[in-house]
Image (cartoon, rainbow, N blue to C red; front, side, top):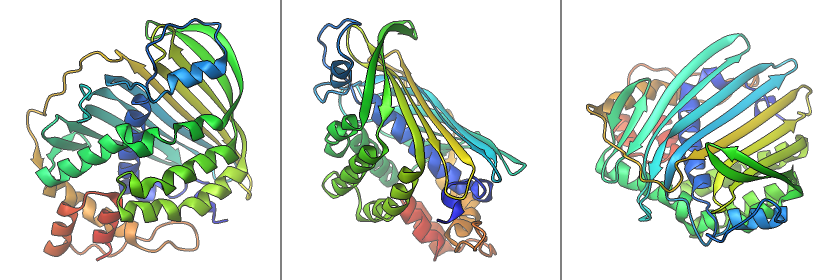
Amino acid sequence: MHRSHYTLEDIPLSRTRIFFLLAATMALAVAFAACGGSSDSGSSDVPPQKVLDQTFSEKSTIDSGKADASLKIEANGDQSGNFEIDLSGPFDTNGSGDAKLDMTAKASGDVQGQNFEIEAGAIFTGDAGYLNYQGTDYALSSQQYASLSKALQQSSNGNSGQGNLPGLKDSLGDLTNEGETEVNGTKTIHVSGSVDPKKLTDAIKSAIDQGASGGVSQAQLQQLQGALPQLGQVTEAIKDASFDVYSGVDDHLLRKLDFNLDVAPPQGGELKITLDLSLNDVNKPQTIKAPSSSKPLNDLLRQLAPLLSGLAAPATGGGTTTPAPTGGTNSATLECLQNATTAAEVQACASQ
């Protein structure tokens, strides 16, 4: 297998990849937060499977709160390094499905002696959207905002998100009720267990297969389907996978979720992957305001265009990306980027 599937060596070569990863992490956090539970009373001595069934029930959702998420990757061996994304901020749908959020994400790491740090964010007010990159806010066009808002709504409330929860739960085993624990001042039931990589992969494949009927664009669907072979290879390399769920004692709503993966790549070394998500002020109103000032999105696209050209260039045999010549961004490419609303569409623009 190509080693870039398992190492971090090409991360600093394309800051745009990290930019898209930050956006994906935002969507992931909001999608997890949307998985709620029923309002039945509960206690800390209930069977752990029942706790999970209540927590990830389709009967109710978490409509608002403050999310804190962290994704950490640590590589040991010949290709050593570390990579971390931290995400935080409020979100509020008011039960309407129109996602409002003010999320900030920071990516940092040390890969083969190269340090990097990137900050990005997104603000959706309910009628306007803004992207933040390295501390500067950029306004989305009405078309881009409508498209991204719809995609976020579908990821958190759509059939493709909730409908596959049973498959995800089926991948969890060796369940233990660890008792009551406080999370952000709320009493929770702590359930731990292991993750069956094969069942988890089957659940992800099922979710992708349902994508066409869940509002996912054809370009996005093809991109996800193209990643399935690599997903299967990564699954085979997982040597240990565990999770911890913290569910509200009184309302059975998710307050904290931890995933830990240990991966042994075929070429040697080891990857440790940790995903942590915690929720505070669950189902309490959140104030989401537009930034006091912003620049046109074109300004950001002009900055990213050279990086996007490098992202679109073919990879060399060493697993790195060779940047394409960047003698300027022509008007056709800029217009294409301005109208792009998905990562696949942005890459298509960059390859023109």
